[in-house]
Image 1 (cartoon, rainbow, N blue to C red):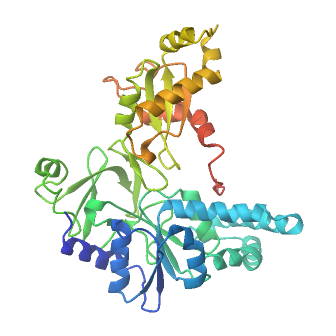
Image 2: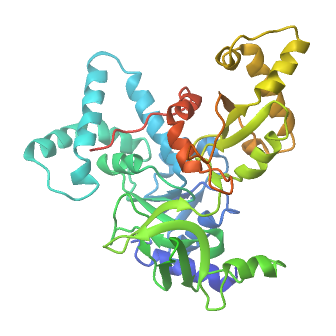
Image 3: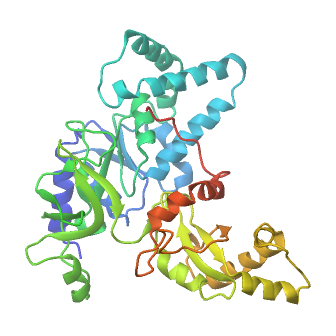
Length: 411
């Protein structure tokens, strides 16, 4: 339950330091049912900013050229797609134009410490950046209207390398953090105080502290009244002294900027901003006689996939019915008939889920997750981060042909 005071205070407080001017023109492209876009728009209105609304996401590219906004808020997926379009267009060039584009991208990477973090840069880097800006970066900025002063990113984690790239080519992206329960903005980077790789400092009239277990706690006029007709659920997260338990894990650095490191709640968030609870999906899959264990992956990706530990006995039973034999488990894992069998089982068991919750791809694993192997807790809960690291290459292959290019990070 969000009151008018929750929303209006948040819109006023977050926009106070963001440098919005009556001369600005904003492009609004997210659904107004999304509290992020709604509160941002209230901030625009409070500051006298003109707002142009995009009715269909398919027309955003055209709207950018027609409206020529100076400011805009978007989710990480927008920046991922924009970067992919930039790289894709550059790679379609040939000959000298392609060489110039590739050189400009290399210069952008070299210029990251200077452009994104304000560090000193050599005369050579500055000179090459100016040339690349004249030839390439100015055209990139023209592609989004040519007048952008500030871009906001929220609704999910933005990859640091993406933020660095946009800063390096003259498109400043300010990342923030918040939740629906906090109306939503808790912390934000702004033109007055920015640190790439963080989600900023607390906005005015909002307090942030870190609990002993690392959970981020929030207090302020933006915090919700509670969950509608759910008093017990409200009591679990909203304490009598006003502190709200976010369920996110983080730390505050020496400069007062918040860094999100993990989620206490086991929720995945796709790059499109959809939350997916993995446990119910995994539990459904484990009811199959063909599946011993499963772990859903896809945090920050386009869609969710699943690592499947196969039940060899169950598959062998099905194989005998079909007149098939396998001499080794490894042979079974690589067989197209087995993959099709498991695919049908996954489809059957997830048929009732929303489209974004259904695993689009899967990998078959031979070894189960165990406590002895370090993949499970002593209460047999999955150690997701451990498993993701262990099967990092396997997971990467699931998304290899759909992952869009990412800029190189400075080491």
